[in-house]
Structure formats: C-alpha cells, structure tokens
Length: 279
Ligand SMILES: Nc1ncnc2c1ncn2[C@@H]1O[C@H](COP(=O)(O)OP(=O)(O)OP(=O)(O)O)[C@@H](O)[C@H]1O
Image (cartoon, rainbow, N blue to C red; front, top):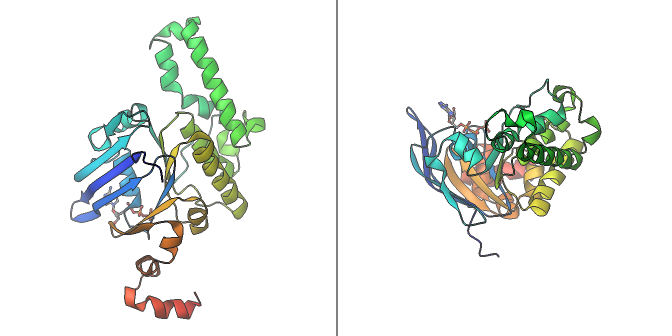
C-alpha cells in the first residue's frame, strides 16, 4: 500500500432536492492512480455525487477535497464548475454522449484544448498573427490530439464527423477529449452504457492504460458489472443515497447488503433468492 494521500476525499456529503435526500452524509476516498467505482441501483444517488464533485450542484452539506500529486489541494464544494475543470483539473463525461457531432474527431479534441490556446494567444488576436507562443501551443495541442486519437485507434478517422463514428468509438472519443485537458481526476458516468462486449473490452483496455500509463486517477459510475469487476481497484456502493459497502471488487461481489440492494430484497431474504437464482 502506498502512503500517498487520497486524490479525492468526500466527507459527510449531503444533497437535498426539496424533500428528497439524494445523497445522505456520504464519506469515501478515491486513491491516487487507482480506479474507484461508484455503483448502486437506479436512483441511488451516483450521478448526484458526480454533479457535486464537478460543481454542477452545490452540496447541501459536507466537504469534497481534492489533492493534486504536487501537493496543491482544493475544496471542490467551494469552487464553481469552470474552476473545477480549469484549476482543480477534474474532467468528466456524461451518461449521454456530448460530443460536437458535426465536428471531426480531431476538432473535438482541439476544442477541448481551447483554454490553453487562448492563454497562449494572450487572450487576444495575437494567435491569428502567428505569435510564437500561440504557434508552440497549437503544435502541442495537435500533438496531444494525435496521441489520443492513436490511443483510441481513430487516427485514420480523424477527419470524420464525430457523429458518424460507431457508438463505441464515440464513447472512447469522449474520454480522449477529457484526457486532452490533462486531468488529475477523470470522472466517467456510465461509459459502458450501450456498448457491446467487444466495445466494452476496448473501453476497459483504454481505462487501464489511462491508469497505468498516465497515472490518472479515475472515478467511475458503471452499471456493467463485468467492467467494474475487471478494472476497479476499489468499489463504493450506494443505495438510497447512503454508502452501504466499500471494498475490493471481490469483497463487494460477496457482500450480502450489496446483493440485497441489487435484488431489491431485505438482507435476510438474500440467501433464499440466491438459491432460487442458482447463484
Ligand atoms: N435536479 C434534481 N432535482 C430533483 N431530484 C433530483 C435531481 N437530481 C437527482 N434527483 C433525485 O435524486 C435521486 C438520485 O438520483 P441520481 O440521478 O443521482 O441517481 P443515480 O444513482 O445516478 O441513478 P441512475 O443509475 O438511474 O443514473 C433520485 O431520486 C432523483 O430523482
């Protein structure tokens, strides 16, 4: 076990919508350079947790701390979404694909680097007049985009409209786009949704390479248990906004409370249901 501080520390996170308590005093940590999965039945509060981490919602209570490998730390619950992306370097994808469908695959990856390019242009027209800082930044942005297109096997299709690519490729292009912002924490909301077995395998391979070759920490919401079990280092299970279990994939697989939550039965009924299902 490494002694590095966790990349993300969520403490007592609560999110209320009127009378609904979507997330209730949730605490968990995500370790640096690891894949942490957040799972749970529909409506358990997973996306709400993501929305709090990425600044789409202001939590009703609790703290969300992010610590960069370099030591800088941020209170995400106190930053807006723009600063969470730009300064805290947290990137996310959504349940539904949000690429620019009419732009090419390459253009999608270039747009993701817009902030860096604007900075290099001094936020002026300098870029248009070929200032050296702009040219260097543009070259770097193209190199980064090319690198990620290669990583996801789409270099040959760089000039095709993103919306025309097969669904699995679009999913991986979204992840590549997020990686072009060079995040320290990558939050993925159901990246395997709608993928066939071959596409899921390609996704798992990409996520493992992001963890192992780039050292990027990943927080993953996923319903596809084969993906979760195969690639996660740690799993946190939510039910009705409350953490009901956490541990390694193996520990979670064998946890009676988790099985009960997924089967929608009381804990004491699990054994009978398992026998019935031949589990
Ligand atoms: N903006 C909102 N306004 C009111 N209620 C909301 C809002 N967002 C989420 N909720 C409620 O909070 C609860 C948790 O929803 P959430 O989408 O976080 O669950 P989830 O675990 O991501 O579900 P799924 O797996 O179906 O995506 C649900 O009861 C949902 O209806």
